[in-house]
Every structure is written in C-alpha cells, then in structure tokens.
Image (cartoon, rainbow, N blue to C red; front, side):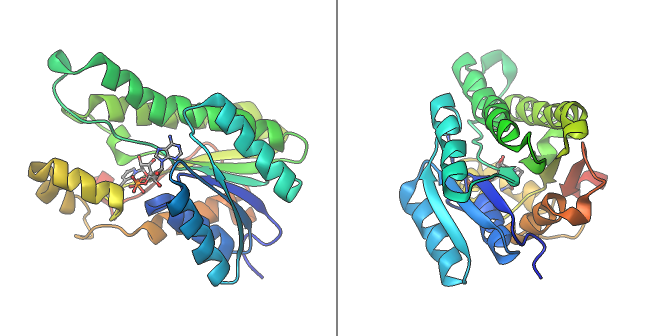
Length: 251
Ligand SMILES: NC(=O)c1ccc[n+]([C@@H]2O[C@H](COP(=O)([O-])OP(=O)(O)OC[C@H]3O[C@@H](n4cnc5c(N)ncnc54)[C@H](O)[C@@H]3O)[C@@H](O)[C@H]2O)c1
C-alpha cells in the first residue's frame, strides 16, 4: 500500500532537480503524475524515469508564469485523470542578486513573477479543481525567506510571499477540505544550485556549510517531506512551513 495510492497529482518544474525528485516520489508512492515544465526534453525524461520504475505519468508543457498555460495544465490533468487530488508547485527561478540601490527593477519584477505570482496562479486553478472533493497542495519555498538575506532581497521577498500565501490560503480553504503547506529547502544539490555556484563562486563555500548536518541536501530528501505533507498521514497539518535543511535554519 503506497502513501499516495489512487491519488492524481501535478508537479510543476519537474523536468529536473527538486521537482523531478518530487514527481518520481509521488509516482513511487502510488500517485499518477502530470509532469510539467518549460523544457520538453527534460520533462519527457522525467516521464521515462517514472514509467521505467513502473509508475504512471503524463507530460504537459507549462510555463507557470503564463495564465493560459497554467489553466491548460490543470485542464490536462482533469482530462487525463478525471480529478486532481495533490499538487506541488516547485517551478521557480532566481534572477540574480545585488544591492538594492543598483538592482534592476525588471529583474526584481521577473523574480516576483517567477517565484510568487506563478505560485499564486497555479494555486488558483489547482484549488478550483479540488473544491468539490478536497485535496492537498505543497508549495516549495526557500530558507532564504526565513531571515534577512543581504543582496538577495528579490528572491527572499518573493519566497517570504510564498510563505504567507501558503498560510493565508490554508485559512481560506481549510473548511473546504483543502490543506495547503510549504516545504522550505535549505541548500540542495540540483542543476539550478550548480549553476548558481558557477555564477557566484564566492557564495559556494558558505552555502555548502549552511547545514548543521554539514553537507548539502539531496532532492529526494525534499521529495520525502512533500509526499508526507501531500498524504493522509498529514491529515491535520495545514498552513505550515516545514524547513528541510539539515538544520540550516537553527544557526
Ligand atoms: N536547490 C536549492 O538549493 C533550493 C533551495 C531553496 C529553494 N529551492 C526551490 O526549489 C525549487 C526547485 O529548485 P531546483 O534547485 O530544483 O531548480 P532547478 O533550476 O534545478 O530546476 C527548476 C525546474 O523548473 C523549470 N522551470 C523554470 N522556469 C519554469 C517555468 N516558467 N514554468 C515551468 N517550469 C519552469 C526548469 O526547466 C527546471 O526543470 C524552486 O522553487 C527553488 O526556488 C531550491
């Protein structure tokens, strides 16, 4: 008996990294998964990995910053599965860092769009699809949202917005049987992180030492927490921000 048997789910940004690990974990736990990404080759590879492991998955191209694309993503899930029970909103982009007084307004706006507005958009259509029978949503936040982060104000503010979006929507939809939580990763070994280390080598050493467990996290460690929060095992948990960070937030 899998933790997510007979569940139908969406994972955004599941072409690589944390999102791919969540899609694989959902499928391994028994769910049928709609894999969504802007990179069709990587999305197809996630579906191949799921089906090779005996799971069931469908791919749809979705740009989470575009409302028509998000609406079509949820419509595809309803057409493919007949219902939507669980969703994890993982797609996001960090668009650079720097002091506010020289920071580009356009990059600030894009960061809010790609981290916060996109999460809200996905929730809008996912919630509408869950209203009749209930469901569970997990948003992927970041430990960057938990305390002051010099030179990372756009991403940190956007992810702090994801946290309060999670709590506020949990309050709004609890009575309709929809639980909404967030997982806040610490520093996790993904292609996105490797790219960040290449672009900002001066930040790599500090980030590698962020966890009190003294190592980087692995994507499957985020996926395990998302599976739990998506499942009936978490039936009395809503509106929570769970750090999965090797203790990075306690320093
Ligand atoms: N890796 C970390 O250390 C870390 C830490 C804290 C939070 N996070 C968060 O975890 C999530 C995943 O991060 P990751 O490191 O796995 O990222 P990643 O860059 O490795 O993967 C991101 C995926 O999202 C897809 N994507 C990008 N733009 C998209 C769009 N507009 N629509 C749909 N898909 C899109 C990419 O194609 C890619 O498959 C993000 O929300 C990120 O902010 C990551």
